[in-house]
Amino acid sequence: MPERALSLGKASKGLSRNMSLQASVSFKDVTVEFTREEWHQMDSAQRTLYRDVMLEIYSHLVSVETLARRVHP
Image 1 (spheres, helix red, strand yellow):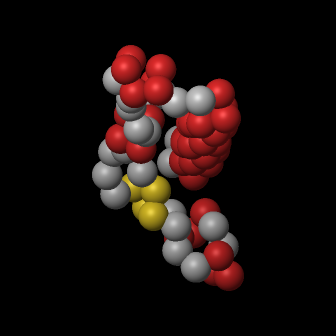
Image 2: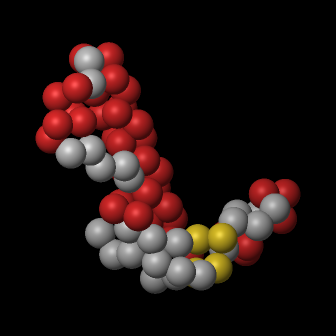
């Protein structure tokens, strides 16, 4: 996925008019990594929560990328 970051202005002015590319951000920039030992120390609920949060972050980044491609083809 290309690395992009968007700055969103006030929603009342219209989303596409207030977006500007500022800096790169990647999935790795916004994730938390655990060592194998740390991962094994987590219980099932903690691992499930981690997975759900990582999927949500990924979903948000994909949405931003999709929107960025429409605004800045």
